[in-house]
Length: 195
Image 1 (cartoon, rainbow, N blue to C red):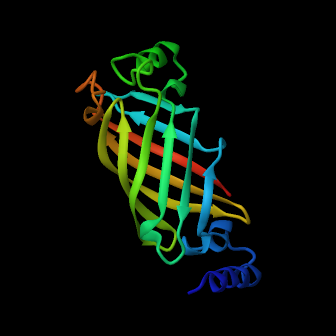
Image 2: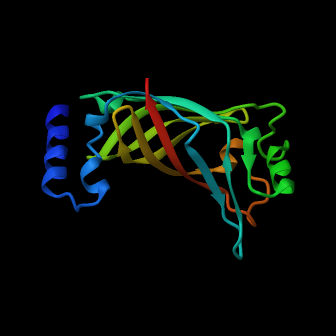
Image 3: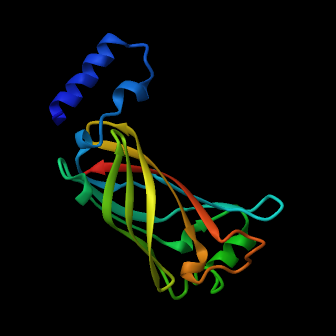
């Protein structure tokens, strides 16, 4: 189905079933959303690390940037480039934030950025994909992957829910294990603006 036919079908469904929820009729296929986008500051990069007995650490990063290029007819070779500044970590607890910025975890005085560069995008459904690539943090690089779900699409904007899990130990950040989980869970809302 071509991009025009997908959008036409969406418009027809909207007219025929106006009571249907927005996500059911206004989110096109990933191929219909093809294009190059810049990640906007409205995005939310959240994470969580579980703790034995409950609790744990939850937070977000406030400074990040990146682009993604969804290639029509060749989604597998779409390109995602993302970087965040670990100095911008925020958990709502100053003591925890200071510890996360220290040499025991992010070591922000020596490593200013964490980057992700995609190598493959595998479409798993009409509005979902699995993105694989290389994550680099604290001087270590490792293959990682994330699940992506298209949540909204407009004339020049797009939004995804991105989730994934990484092992802290791969990046020399496993301080506190096993009391704190070695697994960092990411739950991100990524908004993009078409270039």
